[in-house]
Structures are given as C-alpha cells and as structure tokens.
Length: 278
Ligand SMILES: [Fe+2]
Image 1 (cartoon, rainbow, N blue to C red):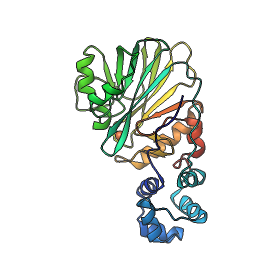
Image 2: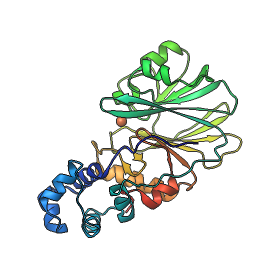
Image 3: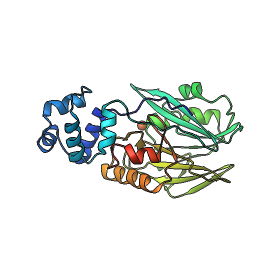
C-alpha cells in the first residue's frame, strides 16, 4: 500500500503541543533547555534553526523521543511500508479548513459491503472519495463527534438509512452509545472498542480484525495517535499521553494505525519514533 499523505504535524506543532502538555512557556523552556526564546518562537512559526545539541536539549526537557524529534526536524520522519493486511482498508482523505482529515472504509477482499469509520466534515467530499467497489454499509463507527469527523453523518444516513451508527456518548440520539469496552461482531469482522479520551472527553479508538483470522489488524485512532505525533489534548494531556503510551506498549507492533489526520503508520513505527513516545 502506498503511503503518500503528508504528516499532520511538523517540528513547530510538536513543540507547541509538548510545551502545552508540560505547562511551559517559551521563556521557561528557554531557561531549562538553554535554547533562546527567539529560536523557540521561530520554530513554532516553522522557521527552524536548531542545532542537534539544541534539539537534544529540547527533547530532554520536554520528555520527547529524541530520534523522532530530530527526524521530524530534518523532514525525514520514517513511515513504514504497509503490507500483509488480510482485508481492504480504503483511506478517504478530505479537506478541512487549511488541513486534511481522514475517514476509512474497511471491507473484506472482493466484497461490495464495507464498514465506515468517521465521515469527514461533509458528505459531498466523502462521496467524491468513496471507493467504487463499495455499495453497501454494514455499520458506521465514529471516533468522536467533532465536525471534521462526524460532519458527514447526516449525508451518510440519507444514503444508508438502515445502517447502524456506533460512537462514544454525544448529543445525537439516533445511534448506539459505546462505553469503550465492547467487542462488536459484524459479518466478517470484529471491532474492539477502546475508550481513549484526551483530545475530547468522549473519544474511542477501534481495533479492527477479521473475525475468522484475527491477526494484528488496523487501529482506527481518530484524534489520538498520529504518525510522528499526537492530537491536540483539548480535554486532558495526561489522559491523551497515557492512552497513547498504553496502546504503543500493548498492541502488536504490526498493527496498522489509521489516524484521523495524516498518513497511515504502524504501532512498531510509532513505538520507535513517535515524538511523544518517550
Ligand atoms: Fe480532528
């Protein structure tokens, strides 16, 4: 599978997120790391002039993965080659503001029936990206209710009125609320729900495996874990980082990670290089 999407975060973004997680300002980071305030602010504005020793110092103070941070700063964050999934994963990358957001359709090989994870911001663009082979939907799963992930749901419901919708607690009433511990069995697949708050108070990730031949499968990680980075911790940095590290420590390294933003990756790749896996 070709992995072409751009990384969601570059060096400036991860520094900003890490400072927020640590409750630090540019001034306090400068004092502890010995890197000047001006250079830190420049980096946050995507102007990089940091020596390897300065990156090392920033990584140590902010408790970041030094190898990943320096790879990111050099624009050479490694992405794995993806192979061997026993089912089909269709990434549907759509625009959202100045950025991009992903939805995914999962299907058995050769099947015309799929499962949709998240919907993108609007149904129009989802429809444009829709895989031609998929005519029916068994279920829709939402990672959380932010507009860029659930905004297309109304259109999906119009197109597939009988398809059940699953997700974490939300204000919408016409769906099945998942607590974050359930295993859902669907034709061909089993979906393990995982409660992963941090970006928002109610946020789920989904581990997708074939029912008959489980294997490592796919983790749909929504706004939790990205290739190289993590999502913004609007609800709780502590919960977000705790969930990311637990998942990276416990899941099979070959599991493909399908994030809400940015390219596909694997658990093993992020275990080694993710900037927030310290
Ligand atoms: Fe998002």
